[in-house]
Length: 378
Ligand SMILES: Nc1ncnc2c1ncn2[C@@H]1O[C@H](COP(=O)(O)OP(=O)(O)O)[C@@H](O)[C@H]1O
Ligand SMILES: N[C@@H](CCC(=O)OP(=O)(O)O)C(=O)O
Image (cartoon, rainbow, N blue to C red; front, top):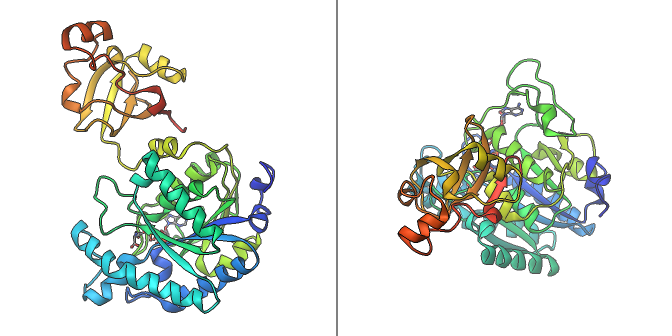
């Protein structure tokens, strides 16, 4: 599709050849917490029509945990990891079976793809997921994506599907992302507040910096508006426009009508790895750096060496995401650290030649390599 101009207006939607559509738990469940089959079928009808019109569709769907609540006789959505895993394991099969039936009704085949955060950060796994998704699309199948909740751990979990959807959009090089939820877009205050107004167009996220959003979602959703805006940030800063609207408006959103909130694309595509580092859900520690190191890193070309680190916070392993904090307490960058936290205190403030001489080869390496560093805001 076209370049920057198209992706700045809603005309990007009808022009899109490939869209990622994400539906949240809140839109797929009834008040009793069970899967709402009518809502699911209504969405499928819209997506099958888009598919028939020649748009490639990737569906990112929540609802596995919600779909497991009824069959397991749970009183409400579980909050502990083990019961969530169990509910998702029972619910995911049911969820995909319902999608397969509903799409089959329109002559469309679906393929289940379960991803973890690891699939977007490890290069080989990223390539693997990309190959699988693009083959499914080439075979005219609608991939039905969810997080692999039954096996993901707390540390490496997207948790909500909003960020997963943004990374999937990137993975498949989507022309647009549609986030479907239980409210018609971003409002100028939480929509339960009297007088809340829908915001129709956001050209840049800075415009809505003062809009109050809560991370408390519906009874079954996760993350509320906060994770949706994080997803919007990941997508728009990598060139993908987003529409955030109520599930009942899905068809109109795809048609480019004025429903929900349209977020214009602001940046160019970045690698999924860099996006993940920049937006990784859980930073495991913080490296406090001196002024010289902060400036060297902000300059964009330097790796972080032990000599520039003044203090280490947190308990992390080599490979974990950490924040780099300047002397003024401001986070300057995020990166993947190359040492375990317990190894670092002995290295702080020391020059690499000194470290090599006293501790041996391997200890003279960068603490965060520049390829693993992303400046604040990408
Ligand atoms: N400023 C705001 N504008 C719109 N919705 C908001 C805002 N602040 C908080 N929210 C809440 O975010 C909720 C949607 O998030 P969530 O329940 O996680 O949905 P989903 O299951 O679709 O991911 C809405 O029901 C709404 O109450
Ligand atoms: N992967 C989980 C989704 C977690 C969740 O609630 O996400 P969301 O409804 O998008 O806020 C599930 O299928 O239940």
